[in-house]
Amino acid sequence: MEEWKFLPFAHTALKNLFSKPVTTSYPFAPAKYPERMRGHVEIDIESCISCGLCARNCPPGAITVDRAAGTWTIQRFDCVQCGNCTNVCPKKCLHIRPGYTEPDCQKHSETFTRPVKPAAPATKPAAPAAQPAAQPAQTPKSDPQ
Amino acid sequence: MAKRSIVPFGPQHPVLPEPVHLDLVLEDEVVVDAVPSIGFVHRGLEKLVETKDFKEYVYIVERVCGICSFGHGLGYCQCLEQIMNVQVPPRAAYLRTIWMEMSRVHSHLLWLGLLADAMGFESLFMESWRLREKILDMFDATTGGRIIFSVNCIGGVLKDMDNGMLMRLSEVTQEIEQDLRPIADTFLWESTVRSRLHGLGILKKEDAILAGAVGPMLRASGVAYDARKLGYAAYNDLEFEPITSEEGDSYARCEVRIKEIFQSLSLIRQAISKIPNGPIQEPVKGNPNGEHFMRIEQPRGEAIYYVKASGGRFIDRFRLRTPTTSNIPPMVQMLKGCQLADVPLLVLTIDPCISCTER
Ligand code: SF4
Ligand code: SF4
Image (tube, rainbow over all chains, first blue to last red; front, side, top):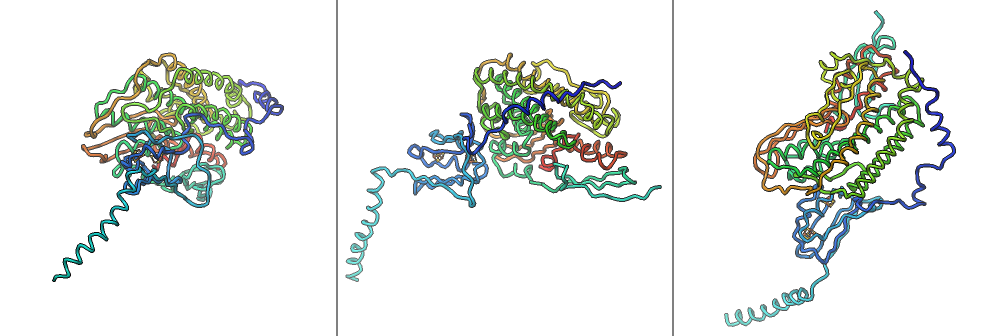
């Protein structure tokens, strides 16, 4: 019954012998990534409203949002590049861009702080200022007692 | 009677890529019985469904397997779409079909490479994986990931392919088809490869049905059963016939898979030529309430998905039966009577994915 072909692989083997390698010489030649490649998450922190939706919808819980401090933190090594955060963000300020996170010996996180709006610093010094004002107000009260 | 001895095989074994353990009962060099045990890489992903939002879980179910990732996402999403009465837009169904077929090409090429590697035919292994790389690059360009695609969502898909991309994909399938010919010839007609595979591990038609074989294993034994014929996604609109072979040996399994690659490549082109325009996602509101059970044809065989939900954010129960689970009993049957030296190759011919069996 034997049906067979004579040396079917010979052509491929010879061709490979005289052609360039298929692989690229990374890291000497930089890796090329397609436009859609999900490599790492980037944030336009100016547009973030600290709603925390991204943190709540991140499957591995890689994002933490601190509304009071206006920070957005990502654990780069916990992120699995699923892209869910970019889909749920109401301000569309998260983007997933090509290029992997560089390897490291330790897990590290990256924190982005929202630039403080001019109105915000005014309220903060106001609070400490109010306290000293309140104390003298109390002392005269206690004095007559 | 010759003296019997038991040889432990796996889970760490130089020629076995998967963490399965077999206790091989030998009489001289002949295997008379094999006792499989799994459970070395259990991850508890099914249980995780109870603590993750049902929309978030799509990203987790994909990670059950690195090869069938698209199919797992698809099966889970389709169950929820049925429960929630969501009609997937036709374009999304076609895109899902295209990605599903790309997964099949990528899985079968991976398997061919592993088979060549198990036989010690290194250059053939490299050639198969060189072709697979083209499909992976296409995945990267269309979905953004090489292995984990994250494009399925409940109600459709997240990313569209524009015309340029579809044309490029169509060209790539033609390139792969051309390059695959000499490789396929080597697998099917090279005398050394043939002599290694021919008549090895015969699984008769009745045995295959009785033991519950699925996928290419079943079809190689002459049963024309393909779950794609159930018509999920856009398979109803595409013309194809299940590929079968009569012999039921390792050669037949190799043949079926090679022919399926060619079939998938032409199915991709067929889907590209028929793809309608329109939206790719249907908005989903509320939480699921109800249960659904469905089957899809993964590259390695039929997989079963079951979802039960009771109106909350979290799903009560999710069950996934992967093809390898059903292919283990036929594998044990096949191993009986073979030579010890053939065991790794035979285990490989079921295209095992033990990690996804254990979820
Ligand atoms: S979802 Fe968007 S806006 Fe909300 S906290 Fe995250 S990045 Fe900021
Ligand atoms: S891409 Fe996925 S894993 Fe990464 S931060 Fe966003 S939601 Fe989390």
